[in-house]
Amino acid sequence: MKSKNTKIPVKTYLSEKEMPTSWYNVRADMKEKHPPFIHPGELRPCTAEDLYPVFCKELVSQELNQTDKLIPIPDGILDFYKMFRPSPLIRAYSLEKYLDTPAEIYYKFEGNNTSGSHKLNSAVAQVFYAKQEGLTSLTTETGAGQWGTALSMACAYYDMDLTVFMVKVSSEQKPYRKAVMETYGAKVIPSPSSTTASGRSILASDPTTNGSLGCAISEAIELAVTRDKCRYVLGSVLDHVILHQSVIGLESKIALEKYGIVPDIIIGCAGGGSNFGGLISPFMGDKLNSKNSTRFIAIEPASCPSMTRGKYAYDFGDTGRTTPLIKMYTLGCGFMPAANHAGGLRYHGMSPIISKLYHDGHIEARSYIQTDVFEAAKSFLRTEGILPAPESAHAIKGAIDEALACKANGTKKTILFGLTGTGYFDLAAYASYDASTMTDYVPTDEDLIPGFASLIPFKE
Ligand SMILES: *Cc1c(COP(=O)(O)O)cnc(C)c1O
Image 1 (cartoon, protein in one colour):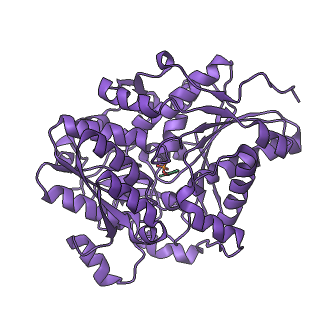
Image 2: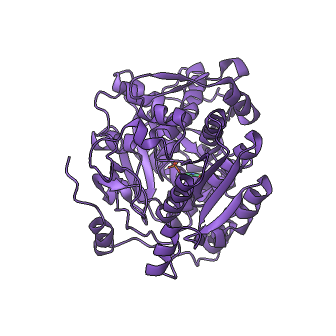
Image 3: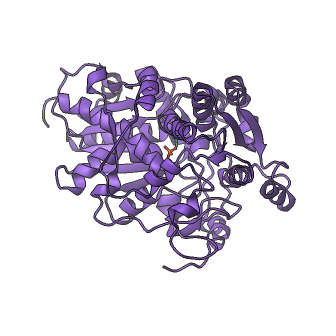
């Protein structure tokens, strides 16, 4: 066991001069790219023209750019970033002490903005480009509410109209999220709703549904393509979102390099894969070029296990089956996750980039039940002082397990994890954990059958 490096400050912030001025596109360093989107009607690879009715042009070009390693961040976005970035890289001394582990634990904290999560990194970029193109309104979906809040903030700043379809169960669990979005000026509609054809059809087949991200996406896309100067924006899954989120990994890498540290293990929670993808991107680029031997671990909820129990297949991104087909790890677009408390992790699929890296063996994946996740969250908030989002607590649990493994076998590893956000809107979940009324739902193999049956039999 090596001695611990205790000279490192608790918090490291980059100066303005040290902050990244380009995003890093990990696809440029992937020898094998992920398979292309497939046009759902014509079953051929999608072109940029196919995507223009849905997404603004610059985002389409970023989505399809697999070759440029560095994509400059425009000044208008850097200006907004400076209002809430850099985010701190924190050495978890108290947690290390509590765990009595030889491991060094670091976390990158993305919760220091009103939206309370990393989602603002991409929201700002997406609204900036939409404004530049002359669009006047945007639509989106939100699960737990963090993405809708981040986008509401960005739309307020750039003066853009916004309609948010919020998964019904979340809008009931988190009424204050809705209030924040409305205060920023967004229109919030619980989904499924009767305002769209796809919403009405989902309601007709299941009037008491809790809703899902997949349903809300269908509604948001429908509104975007039927309204003038309106486009749809998505807070996760897509390659351009991971590109924007690379700012998390880039800042972390610059900060760690000051101390000569290369993490042995990097851990993130994975819903659609954006924070995890952004955090690992620059380190993964080095790994793919044989410059480090870092392990990457994605953590998902046992109730929505797209990587650990899903299939690597072409699937729709939404329940209404309107999006291009995406090759990804998926539980099937018809999968309806149980109403667990990590709303931001309840998506049936996974980013195509993360899916490909996982399929090729560059990433490990693991799932945890929610009571174990909340136990980890509690240890963390009692030692490090931050109330984590339930989503983020999946990464905390992963980091704690790795640190305890170091203790058990007497090895000193450097662990970096992504603390994606804060849990102030999740106190009902914490209360339920404290009262021991929280239950764990893990789907049986049988429960997963209907989701898999919803996969279309498309072969490459
Ligand atoms: C949305 C969200 C996640 C999950 O989304 P990814 O795209 O997988 O990063 C995780 N943590 C928080 C706090 C979120 O808001």
